[in-house]
Image (cartoon, rainbow, N blue to C red; front, side, top):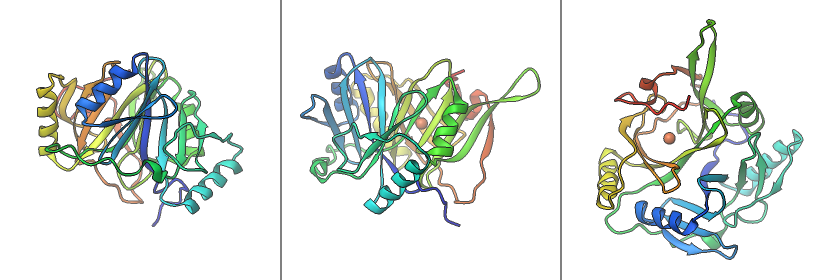
Length: 289
Ligand SMILES: [Fe+2]
């Protein structure tokens, strides 16, 4: 069986992070994640490494105004655009300089933009690995929201993200409340996820590495720079991935991950209890609610 979603095959390409002190934020990512920094014409900075790139701009501390997903070819992008247009979804100009003509953006119920497009060849290359550093491919981005139902209707029903796992909290009255949803757009367990919280906010993004030893090497790299691990190492329940997280200077969380599960096309949505163990099989959990 092939998944019918018109989004299928789209991968996270880059995200934008904003800060009141963008130079400090860019310096952190340059050092902690061995990005090379390139100033762009619009005043933002492009940070890039092998398989990963970010845009850093001026704005509210720790805000993450858009996430950009790339399609593999123009036919898929055009079909996806038609799919959204047929639903009456408002398409806006793409805010990123990294995609070619034809890219577009949509706004989710929390006001964050999702951008879809094709890579612009002008920004290809120049992302060779820093010597001696392990890999780290930008793989997923996660947001927190106070209105999970509205966000699910948008991301799942309208955009076509495919649900992989649900996290459910038992309520006093005997019912259950969804507290997290993990979505995939390729066989990888999730490329996007949402956590229920008291307000809409960015949550984290993640770089996928090839093995446990890469996690060790990234942690040793952080130690050299005296950046403390904020959470982990551990293993998530949903996704079964090994991980640790660090905080950037604005308090936004960044994850190094390995062994993220691959799903079969016909795997049904699984359910996890809302507890620390689901979030970290090895120890303490980061509970958003
Ligand atoms: Fe993650």
